[in-house]
Image (cartoon, rainbow, N blue to C red; front, side):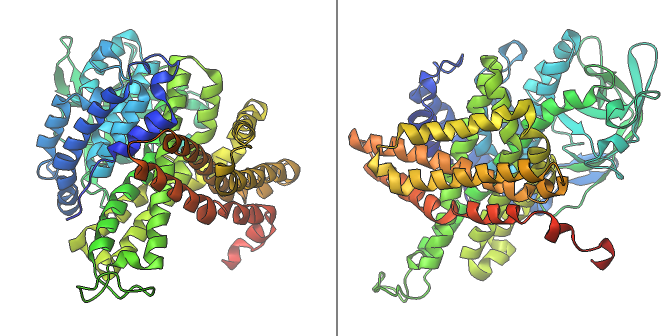
Length: 592
């Protein structure tokens, strides 16, 4: 059975060597000293390694079962969920006034990485609740906050988001679910939603569904969508769950992966709902939850890659196959371990360099969210809005590929369920689809985010890269291995943006046909920037007599690999973008 060990040391490196969070002016960051964050991460590491990771295969094998309208979760999930709640992990970064611990988001995302690596399907129950709570926190009335948030922060009550219907996914303006006003401030919600993660289960006393629906007589399309709170049980005046509402689970989806999460078809039959936010402004409220979810899903690409990589490394060091062509490395055995072979090394270095770069990217992005919320920093808010589709799309595509490469290290055993590696690949696959399929993320990036606020946010990103290059141009240690590749990749990104400006207006398909390549090009530049920055602080640590020089030397070597072997992909993506829409759109639909 695969195992998982929380990468606390690498997280500490990113938080303190790279981001220097305790020196930041973001409120709450001064308390995040290395000893404090280490204690939090070590404790989270214990529960993820000892409690959640052993249940990952159990959840995959048993799945969830629907019996007479009740969903039974896999063996051990309830006890583990109770343990997670008792430890206060569900409200780590939520407000203290509602029972949370009030830590910055960057700590919440670091701990969330561990939970997801250990058991993605399990961690979704609390993750979706966090997102629903955030939406109520941002858009709910004082009464709604007081009614729902204390129980949701503690996960005594869990939450969901209900968007998709059988006939509409991305195009939510086509939805048919309706909410009829009752004249007393409530609505009767009727319709069917599908693909609802954690839609029904018995691990919590109530489930608070956030449901998109249309109020009859409202505007057509997406402008007529509103958001409603629809609890599984109506909440009594004393705050306890009361009568069962008109919402039920009609079926559990049979899925490729995340079997331990109850992905439900939810039926609403004149269920009592309460408007969250304003009428016909549902997408604005839901996007509070969706943007948080998209960053969390981007992180899932990293988390499954990390878990798969850890096991692939262990296998490569243990499995004896063939001899090293440069000389025997295991003279007392019949063969050398897999890890001596260059192609295995290439495979593992692809994984390692992606994972560590992605972790830095995610945690740096989390500091942008904290800066936006805690400092009311509009520049940080604009930058993270620009990068959200890159985080979601690029990291999940790459993360999935890395689980496949980890599986490949095992050879035939990687294809056999007994070894557990296929679960990481199957679980990672959904992250490329839900919370907005990656093709939609690319369209959002190119079609909306690049031009937002006159393009100032993408220009701010370019300025960030240029400033780093200029500030370090005299650093000979960085120049060839890091600065020069980053500069070249950044030029590719700018050239792609220029192509869109020059050709996208006369034919929008010229931009949209290159959007997926642009998303990946942008993602590689982001990881290249992270690696150049990590290399800089690693060199500085070595110059200052680091207590563990091997760690920093390894970091530099891994970064050099990414810059030399992975970052040059930007030129390929640029070539594809420059080819325009002709080859993509030329073939008539009838000829496919």
